[in-house]
Length: 67
Image (tube, rainbow, N blue to C red; front, side):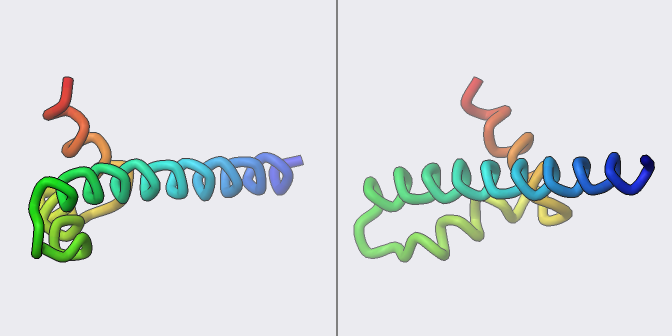
């Protein structure tokens, strides 16, 4: 039974990471739309640079500012 539980956790983590990456990409694109000439990849790197440890921490840092 433990294996099933860990598989569910692994799936949930994967889903969360995908959702977080999509939100960060959307935010980077929104900033890029207002910053002509700056590549979206550069903006994304700047947005997540404050929390390079993991996508969850990056999300919390980035979206805490928007509240």
